[in-house]
Image (cartoon, rainbow, N blue to C red):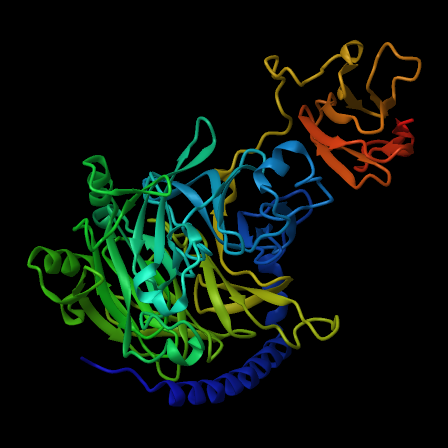
Length: 622
């Protein structure tokens, strides 16, 4: 079996190459300025006022727990959508719906957004994402750019792996980064190999109910599962994901998880796993249908790959998947067809935890070694099927041909790119116009803001010879991103009236305050430029309750007009929520502080926005 470059020498060479790359980039930038190409670059990204970008870029917000939305090619930041973390600007995590979805958490670590797909193409309906920090998954509605559901994923810890979806969004698969005992029960680390598991969850999404659900889980070996991708076309029933720490080390992973010559790609047939579950080939564990590969045979195989792989990416035609080790100088092109043949012929070299290992030579098609390129991580594709791989250590993007392995082009970036994203680059039909390098380090790129610098996203024109033409700061780092054609997303401008919503109030005269014991329900409206909580009261913009009351404020925005959003906050009560045009939203809290508290609209809505106020009066208990 072929061995890769030794770890120590590979890293040393990487640091040297990275230093050279930094210098080369500065020289190339100066040359561009001198030649006047900067002007033509600006023209390429310029979107005149009144016109709009051609693409949306959805970038993960990492430990901010948010999703960043940009326009491409302008690289203008359009929106920040809170997903796993509270957001005081919109009241996300404070209003009743989002507070329940958050489940008591106040932060998240958002990784690896993925669009819903139809026939392997983005359909513009939903965006999914995972939370490494608290083991959750979310679904965002692209009509409103709001989160509809968040699900806690049991038996896992840190679903870092991309929330990749199958060709028609039948499933999104969530493997785990950290192996834990089933149910996260206490088990000694001395029992790691026997008692710990890296559980993968098959999650479905009901588009009618807009609810996520766990269909079944697979108790994989206690390794770390990194990234993944779903098959396409002839490989549509299959999926692949990378692993590391197959040594099953429990401490000092930098050294102890880098001992073996290789790790594995997990290759699995989700259609076969689905059939196994339907036939009852699973165990019931912690309320979940759990497949144990050593017991329930079939559908899962291991493919050897270079040490500590990160990305694994399926070509647009669905015939190949590409992976590489982070400490190796080469990428490997694997063939699905060869893998299927190897499975059929049981061309195995052994097994791990009951999972057959396919022979590397039987599945591998070619190894690709771009000269002086170090630290290959993640690959995207253009409309001609060409591959673009990020080189973390040598700080560059390398373009190459998966069919021949020939290096076609390369461009330095600032610095240490983790992932990249091409226009529709994860689909069966990439656009081949733009690629964005998601860099882990920016250093000297922007005005200093202290010791910690923003990271950068660099827009690269790939329509001809690759050229970096724009750089945008982002903080924190973008872990992953996807680019979708703007015309695929059809947003709404106002929420339609829902006469069946018992919490909604659409007429001023229907605004009322209802007391039931120590519960107070306010059915109010927000309109330019006033609140009405009780139409029949002497002061309709005042809410008066007793200390200790449980208060429910159901507020409807009756301005059915685009972009007239109202906010609602109670001074000193640590409460705020947003109510978009036509929307009804609810705050639920206990009036535990007696006194007089002004309330006001927090979102500018009209010339008399300052006058859109009232009072929240809390009578003290005797």
